[in-house]
Image (cartoon, rainbow, N blue to C red):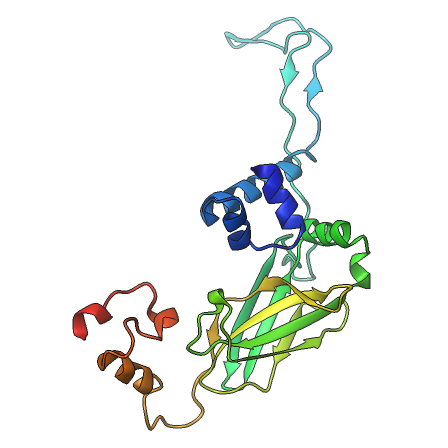
Amino acid sequence: MLEKIIKLKEQGLTIKQIAEQVESTEGKVKYAWSKYRKSLTENKTAPTETATATKPKKKKAGVTVSAPKQNEIVPALTAIPSLERDAFGMATHYEDDIMHAIVQSPTAVYVYWELSKLSRKMLETHYHASFDSFRKEMRVIDVTLRDYEKGEANRTYQFELPEMTNTWFVRPLMPNTTYIIEWGIQTIDGDFLPVLRSKPVETPRDEPVTEGRFAEVVARWQSGEVEQPEWVEVLRPYSYFDRVR
């Protein structure tokens, strides 16, 4: 299964998509992928050392100290990857695939991301092109009251990013709106390939509320027009609404 996971990951599929392909859970796929990436790091550690000389036992203060026997394997020190650091001693990157969106105002979101060397290499191998040759783009998706996991969205737009960029202020945005931000590349066919995705973020209101945001969808649910509340992406961990209807 691991070989299939690696192959699908090289094709740019997400953990969820891979889990569907291999008929497994997202947790098992994520664990297998993390273990594979960890093994790549461990393979770069220093080789073990072999003691080649035998020294006689030494006595000191009544304690016998034995030297390593001939051909005895002595464990080597584990090589810890050296992270690049700035003038303040903070790491400039952590060799991981991350993307975070942080709300700054009702109309602006700050986004930062990091793409590991392994993921860059996978993109280069799959498309037979250097990473620098790819056109990097950001896609902004309005998913207010929508289930994006099912492909639902109100509107989307995307734009090109400058080279060597890993932070961006996305603006102007609409207040009181839920967004998902994606970072990706443009393929040779001109399509957008999402590589990193943020969690949903909601911009705050910029004016006093006159009517609840969910007033309409609550009314439809209370009247029995729909079986499940349409704001499920906000209250997904809860079953509270089944008791107050």
